[in-house]
Length: 343
Image (cartoon, rainbow, N blue to C red; front, side, top):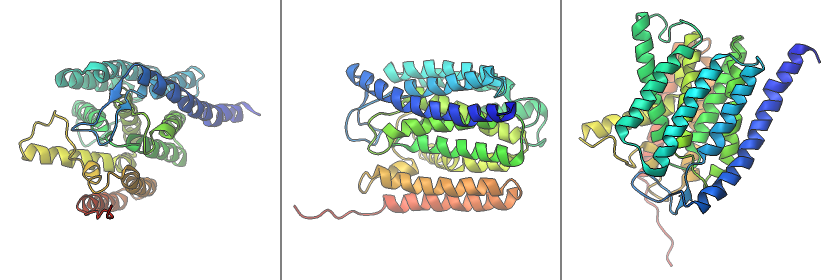
């Protein structure tokens, strides 16, 4: 093999397969350890499961992905910015692990997310604007940081049923891979996205309904940070519409739910089960059925994100309609009455 093909072999085949295998293997080990330590998620206001389940599986997934990113960067197969991003993601994972163990005050969690996003803005691969020059440079970065911090939080908020965050991470990761390859971007971000996708796929082996282990904050928060960085990178490369479309379901469900709770005067920092996907469980607690609806929506958004490379506005309009339809399907399922057979 020539040098280029050898690099491609390692970055596009060997590393993702290694991440996939390590994620599956290590998650099984961590699950048993969490059970022995009684680090369990019990049914409550926010969760939708029926029994105590190990929580904190992110300590298996996140280190595997971060190690792969570091190795790719050391080998010159990924941008050097990956070093800083992995350090910030590791710091968020540490804070989130303490949150999983005993709880960290909402204000401290939010401060950690804001600081990570602010520092992470230095690793957006140059001064290219996120908002396509519509804002002054300083305002562009400030709003990008706030949006990134919100994305980290909503990634955590949305991790309320089996498999949902892994599915979303896979969809976004694949989207970033395909978009960067189709457009010919030479930043080598695609290999990072593929490693992230492989890690989420490996964890999904244990988290698919009925999940035997949960990500916990130690998993969902760093994943939100990493996927947020990848999406912002797409935007700085001019692919703002594909980036927005890829994340549109999570953005819509979380944001609409937050606004509704504010309008009702609820304490938005308290646990709840009022997201569209959570309410859709009401008839039968069918995690797999709800997840399949979301997968269908994510596949549609992925295809529309690819279309948006050439036709951003038409694709975005159709994507908004697709997400509206998905939210309507979830709401319709929430109102469905299930008739149980006689005993």
